[in-house]
Image 1 (cartoon, one colour):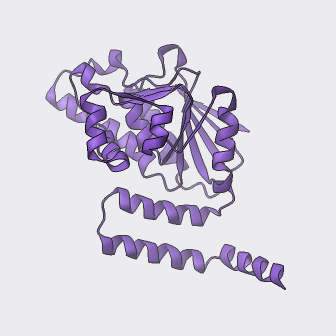
Image 2: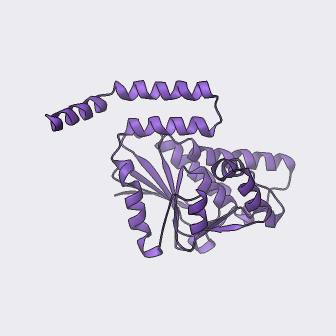
Image 3: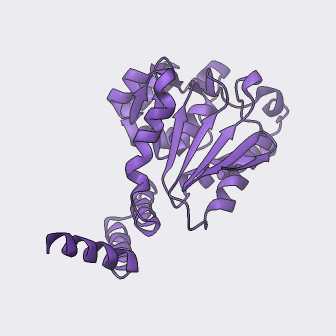
Length: 259
């Protein structure tokens, strides 16, 4: 296992999986501007790693995935221009997660609140620990979402439920998140690592070019591209994977098994 530390973000590679961990458990893994910059750098630097299949993003400890923005840091932003700059920088960090060309799985080892919930929704898929919750609680600080998470939330669970969560500052349990489609899997704390392993196992059976092709289609939908544009991307990725040696090797194996 290759390990690397970028300030408050830990990176490790296990086979074809890049694990990214926000490592500020004593403060509930808050998202300061420096942490967001480290996350952005981590995802951008790994975009072209051909040996990867997916990224697993989580928080250190067992209480919080990420408790939201780091108020001690963000409270220093007091001008309108400063707010605009902070929003653009923070959204760019989450966009590096959203647009990563391979599946990104958030493992909610604990609560994801405020900006932490926005980060969880920036990921493609979510595995939650039983007892953990996810909440868009920005209203408690008399602000709205600002890092693109509001758009993500409405796309995942629909505008009515998204409005319900935001205006009520509602934290949603792992069980409810699973039933609403906010989470894709759930497990007790002592089974969480095993559940993540089982969840990503089918992903690791796919070739990298296939995973990138499917992610490109999902990203096109997420960006709201037109019907024709999305079909063009689907056709492009199909042609690319069809002509790849991986496809012909799979065909040969299939035909040989039937001989």
